[in-house]
Length: 324
Image (cartoon, rainbow, N blue to C red; front, side, top):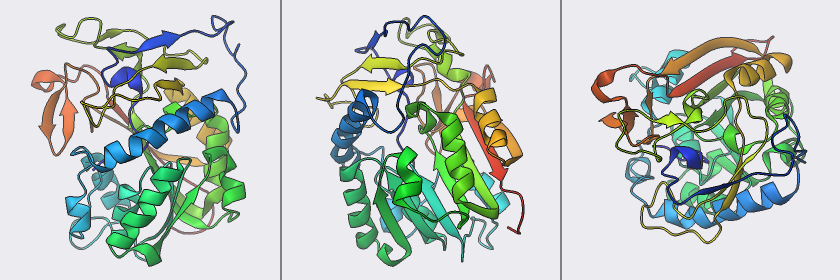
C-alpha cells in the first residue's frame, strides 16, 4: 500500500495541467522561498486537504489488509526493511523501536509500521489527513502505539521537541518533491535520529522525473519535459487526482521542486549522516508514465522488463554513534 504525499503531477497524467513560470525563473536560484510560510505552502496544503476524502474512499489506498491486521508497505520498502530489521515470519519487525514517519498523509503506512511492533509518530501538514489518521488508528486498535501531529515539516522540531530520540525516521514515495529545501529536510532528520538510528527513504528517481508521457502517450518511451537541475519551483494547475480518475479538484494549483540525486545524498552527508545504501529500482509503486506496465504487487515497470532507466531511488542512512 502507498499512502504518503504521493507522486508529482508531471508523473501522474498531467494532460490537463498547465505550468506557470515565475519572473526570473530562467536564472538559477532566482526564486526565494520561505520554507515555513507563503503561497507555496497554502496552495499545496489546500490541495492535499481536498485529496484526503478522495484517497480514503479510493481503491488505490485499499485499507482492507491494514484493517485485517496485515498491513503491507510497497515491495521495495518491505524487502529493505526486512533486511534491516528481520522478523522470524519473513517480514520486518520493529518491536521496541521508536519511529518517526514524516509526511505521513492519512497514516496507513504509519499504522502498518505500528503493526510490526513499533511505537510511531506520524507528522503531516494537512489537518484533515491527521484527523483521518487518528480515526483510522482507533479503528484498527493502534491508538495507544501511535501519535499523529499536524505541522509543516519545517516546523517539526517545534511541534515535536524530541531530539536524538527516534530509532528510525521513515519517509517514502512523493515526499521531497513537495519541499523547497532539502538541506533543511536532512538536518531535521539528523536532529530527530538517535545515535545509531536509521533513515529509510524511497521515492521516484530524480532522473525519471525529467520525463513525461503526455505529449505523445502512444510513443514507445516518455519524452524529456523538465530540466534535471532546475532549482526553481514548478508551478502546475491541474484538476485530476492520481488515486481517483473521476475526481475534479477545486484546489488545482501546486508547487513542486526537482532535487537531483547528488543534492539529496549531499544534504544527508552534510547534515552528518552516513550513507549505508544507495539503491535504484526499475519498478515504482504507481503508473509514473503511460508506457509502464503492471509487474505485480501494485508495482509498475518498463515493457518487456527492459531496464531503460531507474524509476525509484532508495537511501538508507544512519546517525553515527550508539547501536542500532
